[in-house]
Image 1: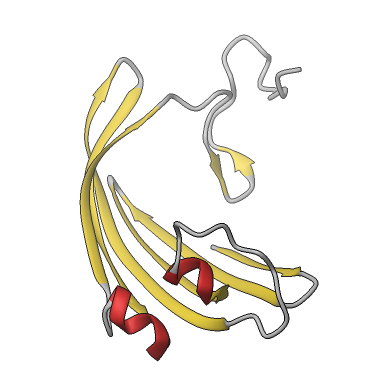
Image 2: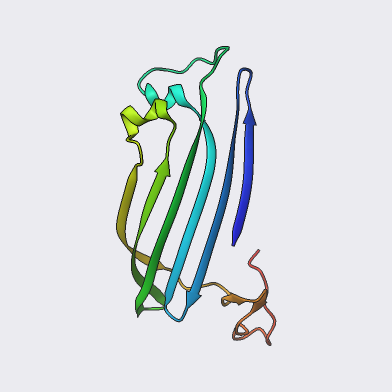
Length: 143
C-alpha cells in the first residue's frame, strides 16, 4: 500500500494531489487499485498549445480518478517473470473540462509485463524471503 500527498504553491495558485495505491498478490495473480484526487490548472488542459503564463485568477479545478486492474504471471524466462494484464480507469472532471474530456472519461489498456530478477532476493514482511547464495545468509546492499 502506498499513500502520497503533494502540493505546489505558485504565485497565483496552489495545486495539490493525493494518491492511494494498493496491490494484493495471491500466487501468480496481482490485483491492484489506485485512487487520485488532485487539482489542476485548468487552462493548461484546455489550451495545451498555448504557453501558459501565470496570472491572477488562475482556474484551478479538482479531478478524481480511480484505476483497478489485474496482472497474471504466465511464464518465467531466464529468471525474468512475464505477466499479462489489464486495467480500467474512470475519472470525474469539472464541468469546464467536460467539453474536451467528456463528462465521465473512461480508459483501459492491456499489457505484457516483463519483471527482471530481484537482486538479493524478494522481500516479504520486511525480511528477505531467501538468503543470497555465497554470503553466509547475510544480505548486503550493492554499493
